[in-house]
Image 1 (cartoon, rainbow, N blue to C red):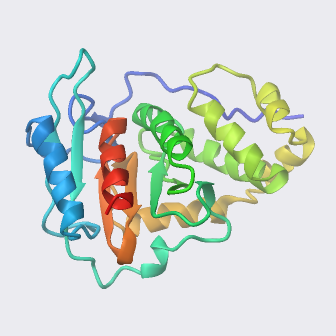
Image 2 (image 1 turned 90 degrees about the vertical axis):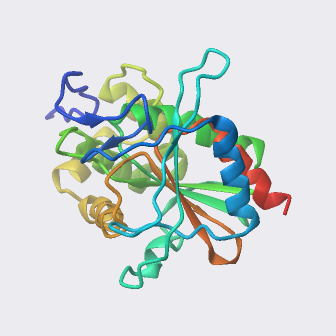
Length: 269
């Protein structure tokens, strides 16, 4: 049986435009950054929610702003990139609707839903993954988290293959298997394919057939095409679906506190 490698790690000296000290995001191209204090960041966040004017930015739209948090209690400074803008009328609004085959964790009737576009080989996505896990664990009746694929193949040539594998596992083993695969990929563990499949309970032969036939390619490509249509250029990129149809985009691997302030502002309103 042909071995299908879904865990190969790329050389850390890959040619990427990485803004690790700023927005915690791997991107297709650089973006300008504007450093400001954490107090101003959280104040701006609460204000944005309080006045409910935080629609999602699409590529090329006005209103984008980025703010850098200061070093706090010995933790590495992170950057917050919250975006307010007019929704592009040319973008299909169905992109932001929850689909039957979306991967959803958390509340069934959430007050706030986070749609995360992610890449299995993105180091910043590994940072945000436990943040999202903690959110749905802390607010199980209020928060839902949707995982969508946006593998940046130009810098992570194996990332799309891992997305295809995750969808094969979901197809063959269900949602629990998908989340086991995804949690393991972002855990930093070096695990062999056979071990990973054993964890998910998926049959090796059926999995191999699914991969070889590209059975899940259209499912992954749908997420990729939607991300491109939204103007997303890096990962992780999270879209918060707020009450009354408003949206807010959060760029990069922001600290847990940034997301929690947003959740509190919504559920306490």
